[in-house]
Each structure stands twice: as C-alpha cells, then as structure tokens.
Length: 235
Image (cartoon, rainbow, N blue to C red; front, side, top):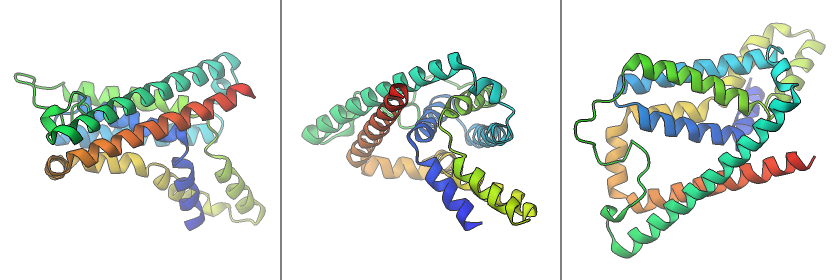
C-alpha cells in the first residue's frame, strides 16, 4: 500500500501533472466565489480526474491516445502552456521586484487571479450549477491532455506483480492508495481555497514571499514542461 502511495506521489510531481494542478488553481480562483462552490467544484474535479485516470488504466481511452493527430496536437498544446507559465512566472518576478523596492502590495500589477485580487464592486459571481459543470468539463479535458505522460507505468508494474503472486484481491486498495497520492495537489488546493480567510491573512503579512514563491513555481513548472515536451517531440 505504501509503495502504491509513494508511486502516486512520484507521478504527481511530473511536469504535465503539475501543470494540470496549476490550471485547476487558475480555474478555482477565477470562477469560484463561495466556500460551497470551491468545495463542490473541487470534489467534482477530483472525482472526474480519478474516473478518467481509471478508465485510461483499463484502456477505454486508448483510441484517443493512439491517434497520432491527437498526440501531436496535445504535445504542442502542452508546449504552449509551458511557455505561458514561463511568462506568468516572469510577470510575478517583475511584481516581486517592484514590491521589493516600494515595500507595499499596492505596487502589484499582476495579481494572482481571483483569490487575492481586490474585490470587484457589483460582481456577484457565477451560478453554482454552471461552476460545477465547467469543473467536470475542464477536469475531463485536462486529464485527457495529461494522459500523454504515462504516469500509470509503475502502477501497471505493481499490479502485474500482484497478479503474478495471486494477490489480485489487493487491486482495489492499491489503486485507491495510488490515486489518493496522485490527487494530493488538487486536494491541497481545494483546502487552501475553502479556508481562504486564514490564507488571506497570511498572504497580506508575507505578500512579497508569496510573490517570489509563485514566480519560482510558474517558472520551474513552465521550464520543466517545455523541456519535457520538446524532448518528446524530438523523439
């Protein structure tokens, strides 16, 4: 069980999966405006991603992944996404430099979307049903595109070993342990946003540190994703 959990942790740290986590952060910060929307959207998002991952594991989406046109399109979409993340990281770095010299968050020009933005007068948010529906659609789309990275490889090996030793009864618990760790970044993002008041207070006290962190985060994932996709394209 612990082996499966550690496998999921290693797989959730690949550039494509981390980029998917950042896309989820963007979505929930821009669209969700209440705790219930954040919690329900996060729940639906995680459930849909788990289902797509499971059906990919048993081969349901093989016709999509075996389509050369889709594979090529997915690679270039991921490459563009990596370049966008690099740009966002640079913008956060410029903001951090501006904050460092002026000593005030009022100098920020590039706010983290939605979550730490100044409130918009008269904006009442989106209908909860629409928010949850979009969450499911985006989760399916992001999961399909993330499938160009074969994050289930080690899980296949583990399941094969279990079958070889006649322990197929452990398939369910092993898959649940693997999936729990694979979904950990999305769960953490949900918890941060649901308990946003506490995080808002922390951000206000350490906004410069958060700016530097997001700059490094977006730059590192953007660079990692771009180099990863470029290596695949070369192959």
